[in-house]
Length: 324
Ligand SMILES: [Zn+2]
Ligand SMILES: [Zn+2]
Image (cartoon, rainbow, N blue to C red; front, side, top):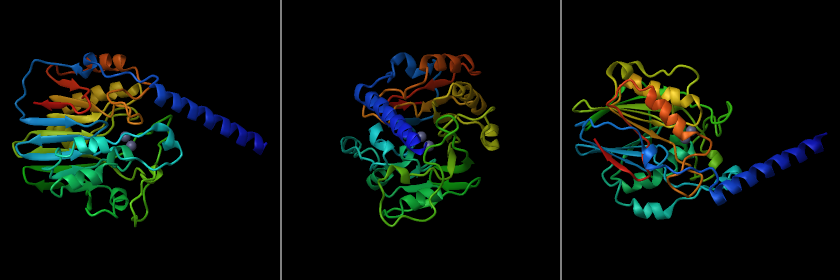
């Protein structure tokens, strides 16, 4: 009986590996981001927010406003899918490192939603390129990057942090399951690492946070990785009350996510909403969607359910720069 089970398991593993191999090798099912999909909703409204946003894929955004430059979820070293299944060492993308060398010089702060590798892998590089940017994240993030020369400040929830040019409040969030109620790399680290780890299984989720930013001229921004919640979308009360001019969130893969994205945009009354985390980061090919989502249908649904006609809703391109 046990032998049969093991054989079955090996067979399933081989099948999955083969599938992933095909996926990576031939880019099966990887639909590209087209111009038609980039603007889920476009409007002629010109917002004078004085904000510039550069998108580096997944949830990595750099936001610049009046000399203030902050980043979220630094990750650009896309991986090959297959080795990840076997807890391989993650690889850093040296080509992109060279290309982005001067992008992060004036970054003052980095906010990290959680410690999965697709949200923090390039933190050491980005932090090193900056003039000692302050990093905020969970205890797990702090433990994970303990061996490095910079320090992660363990974020406190529901309190204002005052910085030069803006203030920030973090909220505890629940990371949604990836697949059929399963979350990969769940749990948290119990003690600090002594040496840097590149094993993908060490990037445990830890606590997850969203961040609310209010710049000195009262322009506001809400960053939340995901939108896949169980039934009705909930956002922190203060964000709901005050609203957010800019919303940075994830495109999500579940059918439910289109409903929740439109709800989230409506609740924040965002003028500009970015739907990141859409790109397949387990292939080296840029500007292709994570397989398995009916992007066109989802975009149509989101657009149809938006309450504000002037809101711009954007699926940002890799390395795209947007000004509002
Ligand atoms: Zn995650
Ligand atoms: Zn993620």
